[in-house]
Length: 95
View 1 (tube, rainbow, N blue to C red):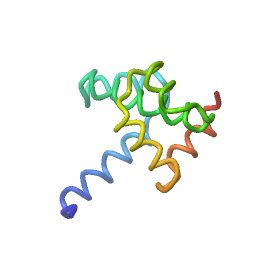
View 2 (cartoon, helix red, strand yellow; view 1 turned 135 degrees about the vertical axis):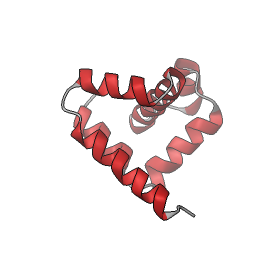
View 3 (cartoon, helix red, strand yellow; view 1 turned 120 degrees about the vertical axis):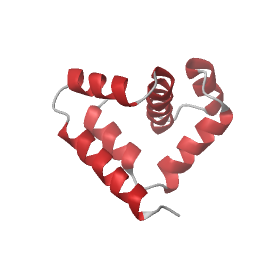
View 4 (spheres, rainbow, N blue to C red; view 1 turned 45 degrees about the vertical axis):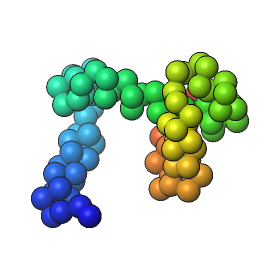
């Protein structure tokens, strides 16, 4: 269960992300707020989502991205049953 403090921190973080105006600001923010490994993991998940959305098979995604089958399955579950966040962003950023 998320505590009230954690909820407040999440809301602040989401507002911070929404306040980013340029790709450079975005890079600087994530360079400061997360490790390079964390940012690479997030960017890898987005690429997995993009490939799944295009109909690419799990084995090809794993080979081309290095993502584990567990990560691919989790992203696929989010694409299929999640809140629609991946689909919204994929539609906005294009191919």
